[in-house]
Image (cartoon, rainbow, N blue to C red; front, side, top):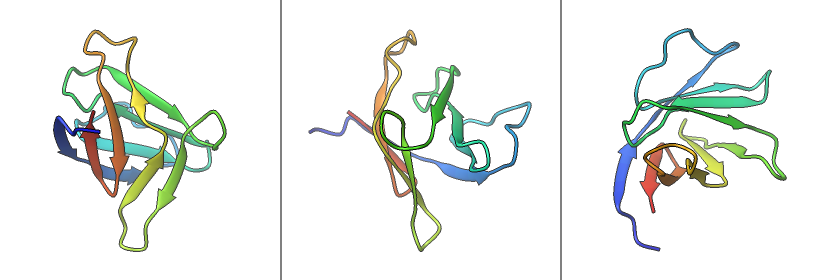
Length: 94
């Protein structure tokens, strides 16, 4: 699989999602099993990722403080149609 672009993200652990979202920040609410961010291509669309494994995404917190998600993010309903995998705070576009 060829990586087309990489974006470094900053994980932000929250209770509730903030009113205003910043680009390249991935908000993670463990109590609500949800993660959300602005599409990492830069288009500004809001991407919501329910956490919980199975058909949803699984959050992996690394010992060094980085995060990974098992499951790719395919924003096919967005005009940008971006697709990426977040591993150790880096989104790799494929």
